[in-house]
Amino acid sequence: MELRQLQYTLQIAADKNFSRAAEKLHIAQPSLSQQLSKLEKELGVLLFQRNTSTVELTHAGASFVEHAQKIMDAVEQLRQEMSDISQLRKGKVVVGSMPITGSHLLPWVLPAFHQQYGDIEIALLEDSSMNLEKLTASGKTDLSLLSLPLAEPSLSWVPIGEERIDLAVPQQHRLAQRASQAAPDPVSLSDLKDESFIVLKKGQGFRKLTFDLCREAGFEPNVVFESNNIETVQSLVAAGMGVTLVPRFIARAKRSEFIPVYLPLAEPVPSRTLVIAYRHGRYLSKAAEAFIETFKEVMHRLAEDGDKSLHS
Image (cartoon, rainbow, N blue to C red; front, side, top):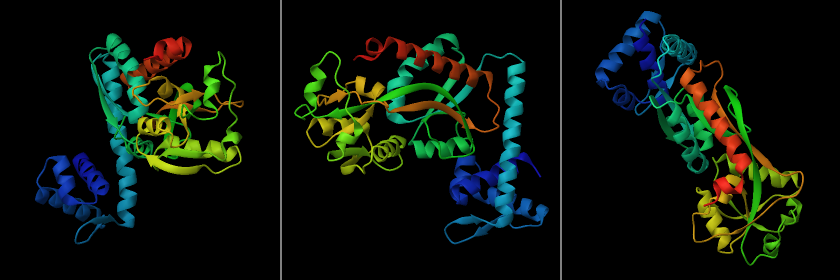
């Protein structure tokens, strides 16, 4: 049994297709099939059930993939540890990020990290929070910027900051006049039970948080429109189509000509916890640890600076 055979099996299991797996592995499909057949013959079991268009793991295959992933993780951890022991400053960290949240935070974090660790490469992978959890659990990212709660039980996480949630309403809304006050009166979530809500589509972590907060306040949000982009959501609110909840860092970065009115919410003030997640038991290289520490430092500074740091 060879390490490359483990890698091949994991890729086939991920893609459920020999052609796609061979393409990603940069080998010919016949060679991939030959290596898998050789491995199955050595093991004396069938790892995949071949169908006309896809391949599915057998019971033995599922067990093999679980153990193979642990072995490949251990090999990668060994490489990382040896690199750290040799005190090399060079390295690469694959960072997963929620697109919108990342677009507001990473422009602060990445320059600060690059200034201190210029020889370490950061590779970004943007996806929905649901997909990012899966990618992180499968080792496709070293670290991922996510918010609690996490659905994937195999992930560990480090908190990097608490972000308040604000209410966004149209300028002509009955509550909008509060924004003109020096210290606007907070809005109780329960007062929004009859409002029309614009929310993110399924698969976005903040959508679930919005629903959870509304349910805790005693009502199910009346959703009139959904979007994949929270900036589109804010623009639709500004156009008078409804109200929404918005993370404060995003609310402060006004990038559109359609700007809603943002209001604080009453106690207990809702918030979301931003975290850097990684697969449980995965060795974190010094480069990865440095990235986490830099992110925490920047988040602390942004929280202290408040509106001055994030005002556009």
